[in-house]
Length: 141
Image (cartoon, rainbow, N blue to C red; front, side):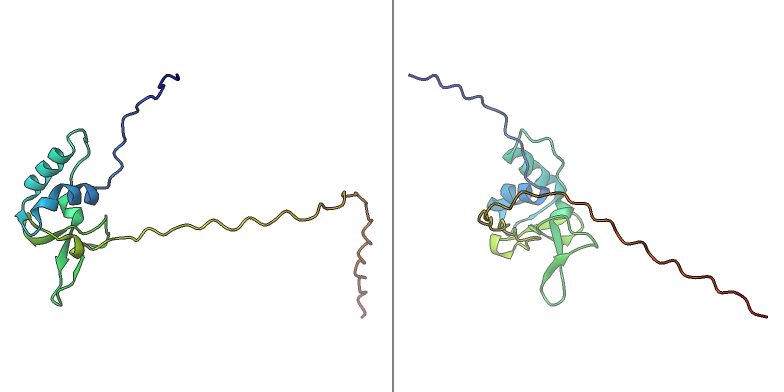
């Protein structure tokens, strides 16, 4: 009988700001919350995390044509909230969330089959021909 020698390591929280907000607010889809309320929900959903919560970075603004877009020049993650007023964020439904990136699947290049062994390399020295130097032209008076 073998002893179970597994060591449990603490899980590292690698979730982004928008992922943590999305996870914490799924029960409140359609609700309008303040940044303090969102921060509390995130802390309740993951009490061991000591990361900051930034609802403004996960919120987008609604354009006149009805599309949701990033608020500034820089996008910080998925848009899981909609900014409806000063310090008021509407929680978006899962299908309404604007994802920043689709994770691309990296396909490794095919490994070529080993070719026939190359013949042993022999080192030969070849003397390069000397370059011709241009002749100087004499000045004529």
